[in-house]
Amino acid sequence: MKRRAWMKTGLGLGLLPFVSEATARLQWRNITFTGLGTVLSIRAAHQDLGVLEQALQQAKQVIARVEDQMSLFRPDSAIRQLNREGILRTPAPDLLHVLQRSQQISAQSQGAFDITVQPLWRVFEQAKAHGALPDAREVAAATQHVGWQRLAVDAREVRFLTPGMGITLNGIAQGYAADRVRETLKQAGIAHALINTGEWSSLGQSAHAADWSLGVADPRQDHALLGRLSLQGRCVATSADALCAFSEDRRHHHIFDPHTGYSPTDLASVTVAASNCLQADALTKVLFVAGFEKALALAKAWRVDALVVHKSGRWKASEGLRWHSA
Image 1 (cartoon, rainbow, N blue to C red):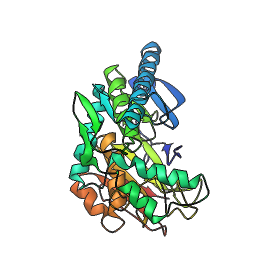
Image 2: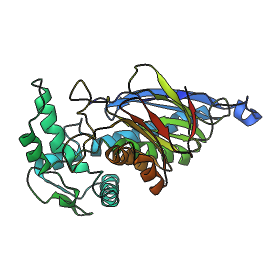
Image 3: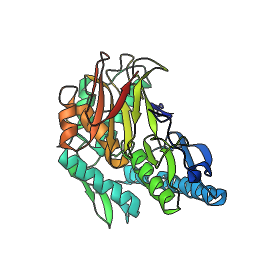
């Protein structure tokens, strides 16, 4: 599965900002590379170019380590091994953390977020290869292998408690990678950066000494924006039904309701702004399952903000978002 870019970088909004002497001396660098199933980028600044270049290389190494553990695109990754063998002994600390947080979010969301939906992905992908959709019996059979409670996770081993299970971290690993890159850059002394790992995080301000802002893509019109979102120091993640659809009408796509085995019916996209990107990434799926009418109330309960777009094109946003519609 390849992920579309649903948010684009933007300049700060509002009045022309004051640019201090220290900000004017900053040297900016952009790097773009592939990973985590998409095109990644980091834009960052520092007064010392050597410090900046070293920090950017460290950031790329962080993403490579996340891929080694959590990518379904790498046949030798740790989760591919788990999916093949049903057990993974002594999981790496990063992977253990993500698995434990996934289980916590599953419990808090009453199973709306569930990394064990991989059997559903497999059955829909196999049917798509033949130009079809799986029938109800195939979906029901795959759903029998889904259930976060049957994934045992501790520092000694990760194990499936029933045969036929599988996990995917595509709904949380990109967010975790953004958090780790942000932490790495900050520890290296980088005060200003915009990080794109498929989800978005930032430090400080843009080159114009203003808040970072992102253009949010219209899920129904290619190359069109719904509007612009100022980050306000928060992390932002988006999920959309067009990122990977199994049917032309986008009724069936890569986001599953773990309880039914099918995709949620009424939303086209969900954008979440949160204090960390792992949470923002995971909660886009929780709100998708909740649906258009309940999503914003649920976002408030999780203490995050959200923008939700109905399949009809209607949208609504939390009051806490600094949002400028197109």
